[in-house]
Image (cartoon, rainbow, N blue to C red):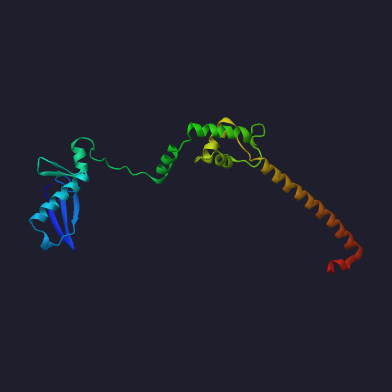
Length: 204
């Protein structure tokens, strides 16, 4: 294998092999000073460089022409010239990535089994404190909440929350009603005291 170029560098030398078609270069560093590079050393380096180049996929044609791996594949029709890369917007890349993420058949079955246990079709909500997210976590194996949402809306129904949300709302309403009742009682007591004291109550 012929060495096309030699560049010296600190502490040794660098041999360069250039592709005869695309001019790509393959460097090979030799830890040998310029003064010590005699004929025997050149032969040894040439053999070592040849083995190195072949290990990297470089091929010698017709005894003289050296081709890099890309040009070799192109010559055999396995690597046609690359087509111009079409730039995509960030939104297009995100949509394409999301389109590839789909649940497996096993994951779909697990999601449906969990929805049967946790979703109340009649009330159109989850039982207890379950949500699309908790179902996905229960299924595991990298299950996405969006998959649960899609299957639930398609096969089970919409959701207005769960039992825990309704219980909290009911408790808040009860506390508000109790506070309103107590405020009304205290207001009446205050009015009675003010009436008993008379005009002086306004200054207290």
